[in-house]
Image (cartoon, rainbow, N blue to C red):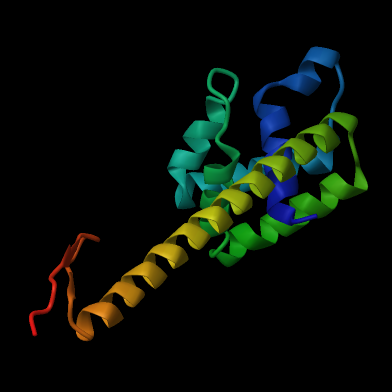
Length: 156
């Protein structure tokens, strides 16, 4: 699984304090690496940190959070910490983390599906505009910006 997805699941679980409620812990290594990542994120993406800190009050937008985390991961220190944290989480699996990772995976799949649908719509619109332009070049129809079409009957 993608390291960022693993880390986002961990963030969600820690942010909602789901483990504290059940009296469980995630292990010192995972905890230490989480703290290190948060330190880096405060520098690279303060809005992400704010969203994480408010997760118990307002659900995290996983799609946006993953995008912000990917952007922050352009910093090599952040990327390395994400990799280390993901490895630590995989070595110490927890049922709640697995459940949240699955939720995130589903959200990301649905976002990809929406992006694909939107791309198909844009492609169809572009194709229709290209066809209208070709017809306009041959006379009889004038294609205007914004998608409106004026039909002129040619006179002979």
